[in-house]
Image 1 (cartoon, rainbow, N blue to C red):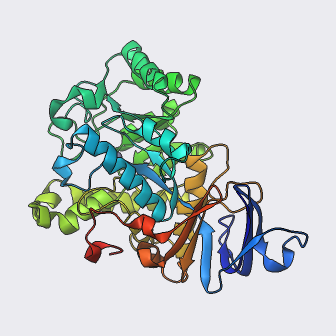
Image 2 (image 1 turned 90 degrees about the horizontal axis):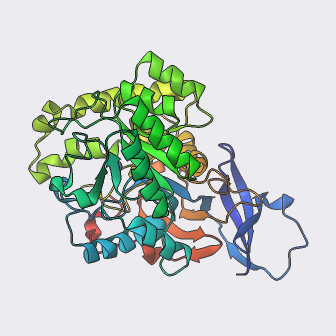
Image 3 (image 1 turned 120 degrees about the horizontal axis):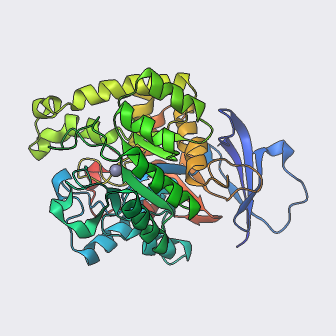
Length: 425
Ligand SMILES: [Zn+2]
């Protein structure tokens, strides 16, 4: 692994919102040695390749905070239904596409087929390209929870455990499989017949057991928590990353604010928006989706995110990409939602995707910003996302994605499941 200087770039280090014109990044042996104004670059650098990034924007690699790499770009009701060998191929493909789209880190929110662990290991050993993956396994939920209602009752695709000791045993089994992440369902889904948002599907004792056992064994816990009650339960017991958090009350916001150094929230809004806007293409007409509460859920999420920003709680991009209407590789669409829907500046959205996502992906602080000593994970973009955040969705503008100091080429973004007309749209 050699030494490379990327120079003459518009450089966004992700440390703050500043863009340094005429910026340089020096990368060596997989680490950032310097990132800043060209004039401050150490002058004694020898045996180094140079890449002229004139007119290009260089930024830290992004984090997809809620990924399901085996989702097969299918109809929402047919996700995870492919046979296992195909699911593995899908996951390998999707990992490559995600990396090629500028995401150098990803946090798994569940792998129904249990593919994350071998996938992560293959990525880490360099056999296949993909983001740094915080791997999970099958979802953990109680009898009658949202996990219980999924996958056509196929118990091999989730773990149903009731009672603190059963929950502990389940978490221990995930540790034995070498998971990084435990995904737990604390409440349900508007689509669910028996576990709607707001009905807690685990008792406090069970959640406490899950989180304590996971933390003892070096794993982190991510939760599906749509309602204020489920968010509060997650915060109370030390869940690390809270998914959805659509409905918040004053107490939930105050609790998140008090723990904001330790907890992250990922609204995962793409699913709701896609089902409302494009559900009719799938036989799920807009009025039916509205009746099921999706418009209300979006409206509530907008006000929830507003309050989280006021309280300086870190909000992450991403969530549940991999439907036919939200294929893998379109994950940067979330930045546009953060700007248009949540009212963020493009800079703030970019910091959510880089600095804050990186802090969630790697608690040891090695990713998310371009600073001396961090992993050399970065994206070279044609054009300036601060001026137009949507250009990150245009794969033809992703000139290169570097992970661990290795530059991957732009062909990485091609996914056989995405029609050319859909790419970047
Ligand atoms: Zn999910």
